[in-house]
Structure formats: structure tokens, C-alpha cells
Length: 235
Image 1: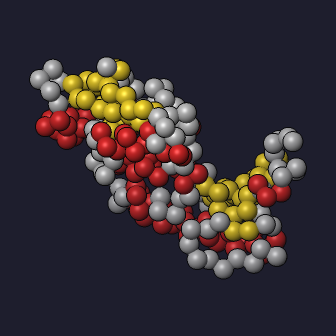
Image 2: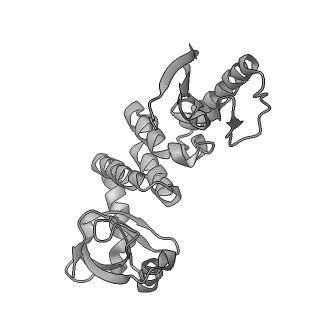
């Protein structure tokens, strides 16, 4: 079955552009998009993150309502942009749109690089699509290259976890259902890696790696103690 789609701009004014995307052979994929965010499945159902009364049985009225909603979202985004509050500005963004939004904000220079980096780290924890991890890591590297303070913060957060050679020891749970050694996510915690090796009823293994502290893209200091790096060396 073909996944060809038809894309039409249905409204463009006031700095707002609404695009209707239709999949002729798969109606349930149809949606209306604002600012790279899917905000409504056309004619089928709504997938809004906020309460907003839209009658999906009245298509013309639905479009007008979505234009009103887009105005609200734009006003809120512009306010949060002035406050340099990227997490507040993207609070209504669906998980599937996080990567697109991140790169659009980089291109538009909407926020400073430290805020963009913060958003990428937060999005990395939320993603449910595997392709996005690499894209967010690439974006975090862009932010690090633009703001030396980000690298300083990473180094400071890992000082007590680094050996005398400037390396950290990390682990990764490997099984037949993940990317194996071709991944970029690791953990400082051995028990966490063991748990990941057994996900989806797998009987996997735990590999041990060494990473130079300067090659760390991010340290997500939550329960999983996650390290993101493209240059881990299997030991």
C-alpha cells in the first residue's frame, strides 16, 4: 500500500501557516499541521494536548476553530520565547513532533543554545521513535559547539565519576531487540544495564565500555544515570 500523501496550505496569515496532509489510501493518517506540530487528525479525531472545543463534524467550522487555536499557541510561544523558556514554549508539543520542533528552533534562533540543549535532553527522555535519538544527539552537539558553558557543565557533572585518565566506565544492555553496540545510550549503573539486557523477555548480555569525558554529549542524571556518546570503546 502506498504512503504517498498530498499536502496543501489551507491558511497562511499573521505568521500562522496551517497545512492539511492527506493520505489517499490511509485516511486515519490525515492531519492538520501548525508550526510543524500535528494538532488535528482531519475528519477523524483530534489529538490536542489541551482542552479546546472543536466540532470535527463541521469541517469548515473545524478549520476556523483550528486557526483560532493556532493563534493561541503562537501567542503563548512568543511569550515564552521572550522569557527564554523553551520547555514552557513547547509544553503542548506532541512527542512525535519533538525532533522537528527542535531543529526548527535551532534554524530560527528562537532560544539560546543552553535552552535548546536543555530541550533536547528533555526530549531524549521522552522519545518513542528510535530514529530521533541520533538526530537529537546531533543537535546537542551543535549546541555544545556554540556554547562552551554547556561542555563545562557536562564536565563538572562527571568529575567524580572519571578515572585518572579522564575516562568513565559505562555499560549497555544488549539483546536481539535493540541496536546492540551500534547505539549511543549507555549507563553508569550496571544493574540498569542488566535490566535492559532482559527487556522484552530477552536473554541478552551486558557490555562494558570506556568513554573519554570530553566525548560525552549528555549526562541525564535520572534513575538510569544515562550517558550519551558516539565514541564509546568496548572493553
